[in-house]
Amino acid sequence: MDIMNTAALITGGASGMGAATARLLSKQGAKVALLDLNVSDGEKIAKEIGGIAISCDVTNSESVEKAISTAQAKHGAARICVNCAGIVHGKRMIGKDGPMPLSEFERVIQINLIGTFNVMRLAAAAMIPLTTIGEERGIIINTASVAAYEGQIGQTAYSASKGGVVALTLPAARELAQFGVRVMTIAPGLVDTPMFSKITPESREALYASVPFPHRLAKPEEYAHLVQHIIENAMLNGEVIRLDGALRMAPR
Image (cartoon, rainbow, N blue to C red; front, top):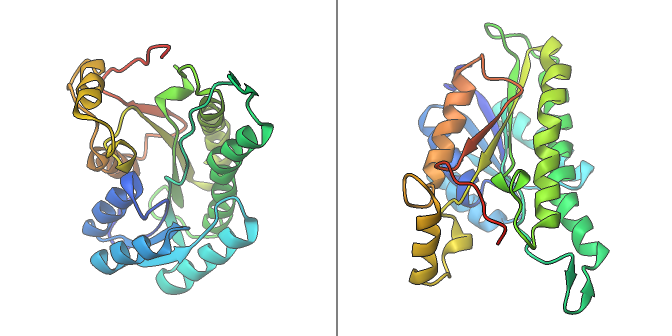
């Protein structure tokens, strides 16, 4: 699919991988709408790239419907949807204070998995009535994690949420194939996002050493470049691509 003059929705677009993707797709000529609860940061990026920022809670149907409608009124119907919205979570299922509160597990699943599915279903519904361009009507790219495969101790909730994103990729791609809408997922490893900004230099070096090659954290821009390639390569469909430098997470 060509990116030039194509409308794109990016959830979690106010920071990290979402922001990097917004910048890159904008440079390629896309009309970008950043959907995020952090509207102030989203507006800064939108101003920088000539896009729009829209307040959106991915777990709420009405919020997503309104955001998609607002973006469509400004840019036309979106043929590209990139789901980057999500939260990290680290807590043992059974800790010193007893079992993890069920509400914590529910919150992670609600945002990372249900939020992804919520945006997927509504974005896909808006793509299906569009005319085809070449072979396609649209592309949806989700974000999982290598924790879906090698979740560490304390990642039961996070791994379950990202494992769900991995699991829905193929059946969703099969279902939407008849409409010319592709579904792909990226599973990043350790990415140099604001989450790692407060760790010590020693901890950072240890993280570097855990990645076989290259010995460093992935850059958000590398995630964005993979998004670009997926959009442009029509044969990529129904698959999860790891972006991890051959990292395989240890138990802890």
